[in-house]
Each structure stands twice: as C-alpha cells, then as structure tokens.
Length: 223
Ligand SMILES: O=C1O[C@H](COP(=O)(O)O)[C@@H](O)[C@H](O)[C@H]1O
Image (tube, rainbow, N blue to C red; front, side, top):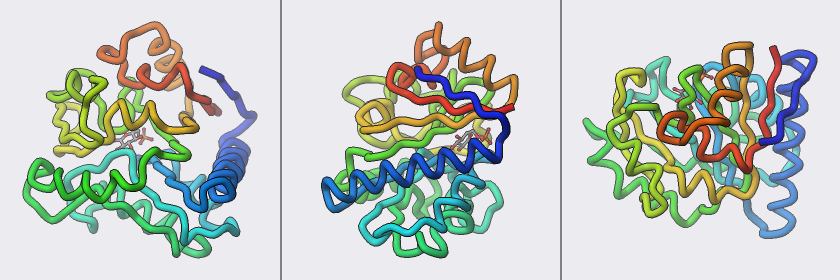
C-alpha cells in the first residue's frame, strides 16, 4: 500500500476529491465513460461535497456504492440516501446511479437484477473505499456469513452479507470486483483506523478483509 498522510481532514478531503476527479477525467478521455464506486458511512461526505461541484461530463459517469445496508432509502443509515444528498447533485446530478438496493424483503431476492444492472459498467475506473476499525471494507466484515465466498476468485460481483457487527443485512461488491478496479483509494481518519490498517497489512483478507486490496491501494489518512 502507498500511504498518504495529510495535515488535516479538510485538506485530505479536498485533495482526494481533486485526485478522483482527475482520474475520472482520464477515463472519460480514454474511454468516453467512467465508473466510480464509493463507500457509505460517516467518512466520505466532504469528498462528495467537493466532487459534486466539479465540472466534467457527469452524464457519462456511472456511480455505484461499494455496499448497501438493506434499509429503505429514507432510513438515515441508507448509503444511497447519503449519495443522493451529497454526491448526485449540483454538477454531478447527471451521473447515472447503479442501484445496490431494491424493494424486496431480503437482498438475496434482488441479487440477480442488481448484478444485471452492474455488470455492463465494470470494471470500476476509480474505486474509493472506507474501512471500519474492525478492518471491514465495503460490507466484507470479519466473521460474516458469506465472507469466504466473497473473497474467492470466482465470486459473483455482488453478494448478500450478514454479520453481527453489520446490524442489518447488507449487499456488497465482492473481492474480484474490488481487485479489478483500475485505481483504488482507501479513505480513513483517526488513530484507531491507522493502527487497524497497519495491522491489516500483516493479516489475511479472511482476518482483515481490507487486506484484499491493500497491495494496489493508495491509503489516505488524517488525524
Ligand atoms: O458500514 C459501513 O462502514 C464502512 C466504514 O464506515 P465509516 O462510518 O467508519 O466511515 C463504509 O466504508 C461502508 O461503505 C459502510 O457501509
């Protein structure tokens, strides 16, 4: 992993948003299209705020979450809700959202349809991941029911996931899709997450799921 330390969070979020927009621009120039995958949770909001104000041909950009919690979109824990409020607005409003959520009681019932919508937009041009202090990324949680299968080289692009630490059922991109991304960034803040990612670098993806991308990741950290 390549580790980037910033003097403060504000500077980090700004620089990272600039970096992501320039990488999306490269993909747009090279291929006429780009796919951006982003985390939910509490950390990436300020990156989304900056990105949403960047001038580019957003109509050719597809945005997909790394993972979604199986809750309705008006639930405060919905990652899709965060995306709509902070990223898919202003200049970024024309971007196409690839859904990771459908109105079914369980993620399993929606999987086939969601995979069908996602596959034409792979590989991911720019992947931004978050990480929990337990070293989960996307919804690849240590000890999760489908973790082993989601880490396998022949995993489908999306899987349902349940874990004690996850709360509600989840749907998540799997390791092969994350590893096939052309550029990989991990955004983390605070001393505990720094210690966790340093620990993860010495562990297997089964013990520390973030480890499945660390060999190719740029890690961005501020206190
Ligand atoms: O549950 C989730 O957690 C991780 C980390 O979230 P944070 O609140 O600690 O930033 C996030 O990357 C993932 O997308 C989300 O669903």
